[in-house]
Image 1: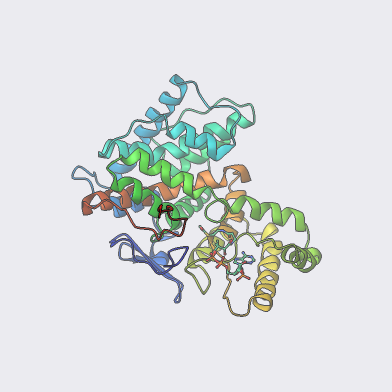
Image 2: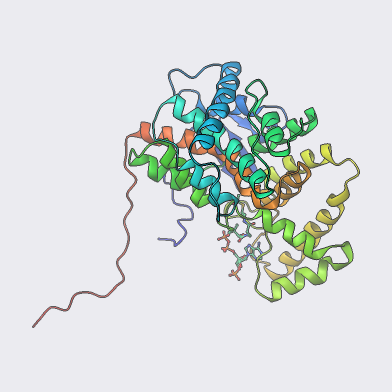
Length: 359
Ligand code: ACO
């Protein structure tokens, strides 16, 4: 037994495969390079959900269904008390998701796929004292998401960059949140419960909660001259460098490159990229010196932070944007798990006290 279940095979899946030694991610027969930057979110949704719903429409129909679902989800928040108070962004989105009914059908799946975008936009605007913006079902999902968050129409390059992000993170083998979502789905609790489980697991800093702290790190470092001493001090304190290391990848996470390319399309003057590249180089060198037996490389969260910042999202909202993409993976895995027909129920080794038996 390993405490973190490393190497344990807990599912058979047709959805995605992560090869941590080769640095390769395959999503339903396509390499990440074939999808990221070339595929809209609705097309990725069609790819992953194909075969899991008998009434799944084609890509154009699915894009239209996402638009209608955004409008319906928006109407629901407005009629059920709006954005909750006293919670951070991901907690607010979790609370709003929990207001949705459970179900196993395509309608529930499309609602859940569109909901994180509507909720995140409403939560971000509420934080700034602004009214939420009504979705425009005629726009594609990424363009409408940016419009709802920022209040202005996104450029085609910005919408394409958000599509690249959502597709890049849509599925990634049996990561912690996907495993958790499959456990919930295996009890037949329903898709909303599975997605809520996924989101609750994603929010931790060792999983999807890292990109906000990446921005805090870049802000704290400030300029290239401070990079090396800042990292040395952080590691001397015993801190982990956010955006580095991965349970599976022993080489560079292929998603980091896909996202770095997307950042370049938005910031041709490279601005923040210069500092980020200096941090990345120094971090990799120092981690190599300090942990010679463990290959610690850049993970997806490092360039996620730069891309989402360039798109105008606040660091508080980064994990919610991650959830916009990963909900697709959770839904497909939930359906696949239910189709397997098997409850997930592992065993544990008891190491506690034994009852005293009277002599
Ligand atoms: N900075 C400094 N040291 C690190 C880092 C890091 N980012 N990552 C791992 N290490 C060290 C550990 O302290 C450990 O050292 P030790 O053997 O002296 O105790 C050694 O490397 C091995 O680490 P593990 O804990 O075995 O690695 P694990 O596979 O459990 O962790 C994880 C992977 C959680 C991602 C880790 O690398 C980490 O905490 N990274 C920072 C947070 C982060 O970027 N999270 C996003 C991950 S990507 C995603 O989930 C979408």
